[in-house]
Image 1: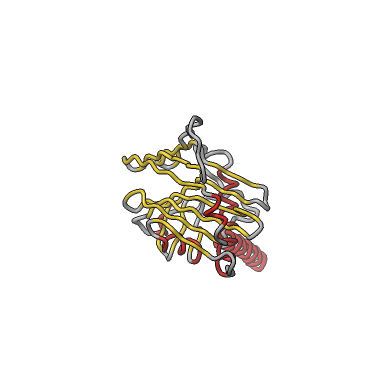
Image 2: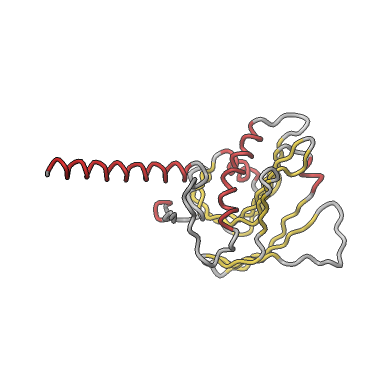
Length: 226
């Protein structure tokens, strides 16, 4: 009887260890494999899919950055080019709301995801999630834009209202294998755009994020999977 109970205990321990390994691998590879991500009902219905593509796109952008050469080099503009570069080279997705950049935790909100080869696109238009309200202001259809398209977002967070515009400028994106842009919205709050292109194809993949620098240890955040 004791031997039987000992064998049962070993089997249970082995299964538990295997589950922990699978979860660990899923988290640090930028995706959750067969596990379903559980997000609050206040999140947009297709936000889960955008989250699952985020890890793939960051991996692809990093590979493109490391292998970039003429005629398409890499380029960074904006308030803090180093932030966009570090997002590419030294970031880890911790869970569906938090990532690490150079070891520092940032809460992130996905504004836009595009993966041409996957046939997937996501645009955040209006959402309220975990204390952040954000919406994409409709573009003025009476105005003619030349050279690029503006995307103006209005966001409320921690009692502060932010209004910012991100631009999609085709000729600029097409000039670089990897292009990154960063904009400071407030103390510890940023917007970042990353694009990849090839000599034959404009905007192969892109991701636009709002990043909010966290002021407490990453261990205080949980991972929701089911």
